[in-house]
Structures are given as C-alpha cells and as structure tokens.
Length: 504
Image 1 (cartoon, rainbow, N blue to C red):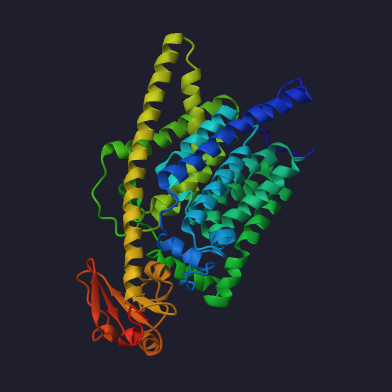
Image 2 (image 1 turned 90 degrees about the vertical axis):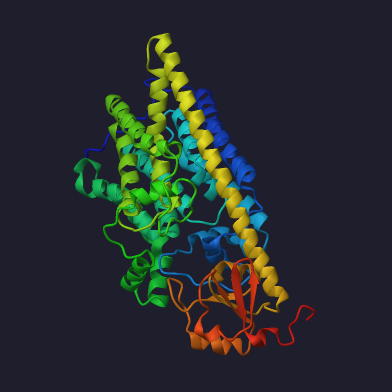
C-alpha cells in the first residue's frame, strides 16, 4: 500500500457522531465563518463607500468590458481574469456604486469559501479568527470592493493550500481534489506569475518528497494552473510577440526584475500609499509598523504549537507558501504596493490565529489566563484602531483624487472634447475613461502610439494633451490652446473646439 502523509483532522473523533450532531457542528462552524464574511462585506460598504470612483488600474481592467469608454492599453503583466469577474455588472452598467456592491458581495463570498476549505484542519474558532484578522487589514478592506486581482490571488491561495492538505490526508476526498484545481485556476486567471510563486512549495513537495507524491493531486494542480493561464499565454503569442517576449516586457514594466531589496519600501507604503514608486516617503509612525513585525513572530509561534500537536504540515505549508508569495515583492522589484502582499497575509492569518487562540487558552492558572486574554484583547483593539485610521485616511484621499478626475472630465466636455475623442500624456488613462475617450501615450510603460499618429487623429477627432504641473507639453501640442484646471494644463487641439463649443 503506498504511503501517504498523515494530516490529522482536528474535528475527527474516535467514535463517529450521529448525523444530527454532524449537521449541527457543520452549521455552527459555517455560521461562524458566514458571520465573518458577512461582517467583512458590510464593513467594505460602510467604510470604503460604494461611491468611490474607479482608480487607474481599475480603469484599465473595467474598460476592457465596459461600454463607458474604449478599452485602455493593456500592459504585459496584466491578466484579464478580474475584468471578466467584473463583466456581469460592468458590461452593461456604468454605475460605479453598483459595481462596488457586487464586488463587495463577491469578495465576502470568496472569503467564506476559502476559509471553508480548511474545515477539519483547524478548529472553527481558529478559522473564524483568521478570517477576521485578514478581513480587518486596511489593505483587505480597501481592495475588497475594487476591480483588482491581488485579493483574488489571496483567496485562491488560501483555498488552494487548504484543499491540498485535505486531499493529502484523504485520497478519497474528490471535492478537495476539485478544489485544488479550481483554486489554482482562479489564481492563474488573475495573475499567472503570482500563481506560480504561491504554488512552488506545493509542486516541490509533490515532486521531491516521496510520501507526499500523489499523481492525481499533482495533475489537478498543474491542470488548474494551465487552465487559468491559458488565455494569458495565448494572448502572449497573439499580441505580445510570444511568451518569452511578454515575460520580458512584464519585467520591464516592473522596473526590471532582479535583486532589489523592497522591504523598506513595503514598510513605507503601510501608511496608506497605494503605490510607492519611487518610494522616497518618510517612515511612518512606529505604531503603524508594529503589526508587520509582530506578524512573523506570531506565525512562528503558531508553527511551534502545530509541531507540538503533531500537525506540522498544517501550519508549515501555509507559512512556506506565504514566504514564496511575498518573496518577489520583497526582494525582486524596486518599488512597493501593499496589495502585492495580500496572498501572504491571507496565508499567515491561519498560524497567527492559532497562536492567539493558544495564548488565551493554554495557561492553566486563572490569573495567567486573565492576563493573557487582557494583553491579546488590548493588542487586537489597538491593531484595529490603527487599521481603521489608515483606512479612513486613504479612503478620504482617494475619494478626493477621483473626484478631481471627474471634474477634469467635465471641463474637457465643456471645452468640446467629447466622445469619440482621444486623451494623451499625464494621467490620460483614468481621465479618458471618465471622459469617455480613448487614451494613448508615446512613451513610458503604457506607450502605444506615436506623435505622428496623435497629430493625424487631431485632424478628425477631439484630442487633448494633459500636462502635469511644471512639465513641458509634448512637441506636437505646443501650439495648441491650453486651459488650466487646478495645477494641470490641458492642451486642446484646435480642431477639437471647431463647431463643438459648450452649446454644440
């Protein structure tokens, strides 16, 4: 008989409980997870607010399926999974609020299903606490209702490792086997390169550790990754000159992959900087950073607790996958964005929750237990207060920035720049979407046209070049009339206003 890894299921009992008891246990446990997921959804709608306009990256993804504006330039690293995820709403409605509500409901459901994949591997109270810890991070709340891929890579990775361990423990668990394939496909559908980093430890143990080697499980994992990445690979040959060229282009967009210590950049971004590039901001207050240093310590404690309980794999595997998921964003790129580490945070939440439960339940004396409960409670309250403060700050700032884009779009309409039209240069991609125009750039990561093409377009369509404060206009627009809105200048091609004034 072939050997398999014994992964003890914490809910297993020597004497099989009755059907009624099993049903009550499942309902009670899943209702706890459902409560966490529901609270997460409600918190998104309350704290982030559905009226927040679409951001730069969201515009790129949504414009691929939205009737509001032509599709924006789709750079090499991006994948179309999140665009298709938003398509049921974005393909027929231009309501941002409706799209936010849909994504918040979907993200809550995703969290519930990902935590449910771990049933039997951790006690339900640990799973519920892990879900709450992940869901209350400002980065999770902020990006949950947004059309961005990183949260969904985190959900896919969290579910994948849980299903993987269940399939290892029970070769007859076909649901877990299907869960492995579907979770891997979800990650690859969203960001194929991230999916590879998350699954590296799983592939390694299946290929290198004999007692872990199960060919059906390996096939499910590989087929899931291939199925999710298929569209991205096909598109590489259709639109980017091949897979190798697309990977090279993706590396250039990210500043050239190589040894780059970005740990300090990630720390600077924790104060609420959604993109830290270049990351020259001052260091945040130590209170904002402390949870980031406590996180690995608690995760290590969770691993120790699991080793002593004879459940090493249940804690070690998510820790290892979290490390490989975070590695490229800590050491291989020269900038930072907090959302990049969401898969690592989701996987670390499980051993951290196990450690916290251990701290408040293990002390035998009543006095020590009260002290432990008090310290953990105070720590969690302080942590939540800091997360809320950062979230509130970034939400207010983001609302203001996106209202500025909407005002710029309204001013462009007043000047006669209406669809069909073209915007170029500074922040052209998001403002073009708000205006209903196409966007184009002649240089940078989003270069997709030439000055000559823009000049030809300006003879037949309204065209405007947006220029940042203190920057010089492009050569082709220097003779165009310009207008100011705030500190930005808008150079509008003369043909754009001919016969298209405010009353046209």
